[in-house]
Image 1: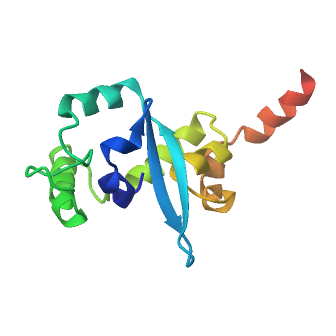
Image 2 (image 1 turned 180 degrees about the horizontal axis):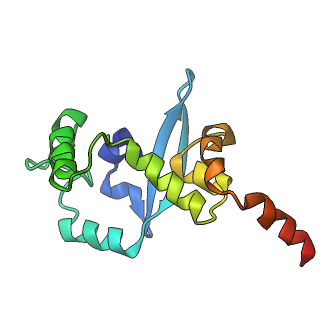
Image 3 (image 1 turned 45 degrees about the vertical axis):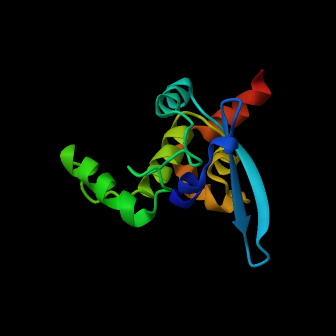
Length: 141
């Protein structure tokens, strides 16, 4: 999810181990909802926090996070582990890169990231060097 999508996520949006993420695209503000599956580790971590707040991700005062509140914590964490030149949005790129390297289809990656077309995820296609060979292998079976 993008930071805006993450900060806007409410407990009502978490349904059956899925985060129902609503996005508005384009000038017309067309609304789309995508269901992003959550792993057991994620749902367990979310359960530790409980659902006593409206938003899933809140600050210490149980108010919805903002980017200005979040960035200092993010950069403190990256500094603590020695990661340099890494922004929160880079997490989306890393997520997509790992999925493609493990064989996920570009369509699935686009759906998870909330892209309406494949053109946005084509930048990751070079990370799946065997995709052409794997596709030809489908014909040999």
